Image (cartoon, rainbow, N blue to C red; front, side, top):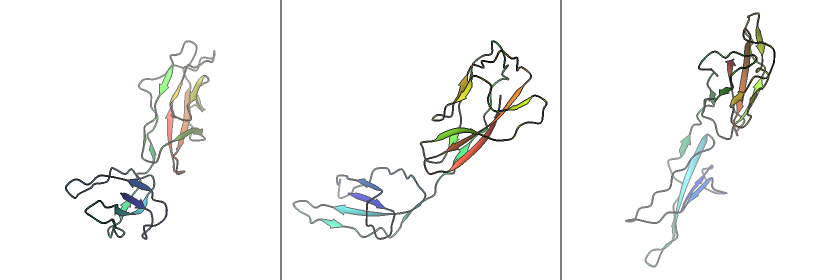
Length: 171
């Protein structure tokens, strides 16, 4: 049995436990996916068999140091200019998130607004952000012709550790 601890004494509740069978006197732990940055320590235990006594290793002399991948969110872009107004085509924009620790939560937050005469903060009427997936989708519902309007928005993503990242977008 392999146990991974977040302290150098190898005590308490393990972060990860894996039980493997010996093959030619060797056992290898399954893959471990860390969820937080830090230094972790392995302890291996062999429960013994009819020919060998049980044994537990000391705490690994070489700790495993984990560096978290920073949470990033790429800017939101559309593949072609969107005409916003009566009869507009549906909008569907998927975020590009890297790093951090899922699950993620997305929201629209205050951000920069362009300096043009027709720049408007937020998303067009009828277009929404899915807070679980970050997908921005919908069909603009306003009967107003927004074809010369630029909608400026900022999306924030928060991961399960509280890390945040933001990205700007324009429709």
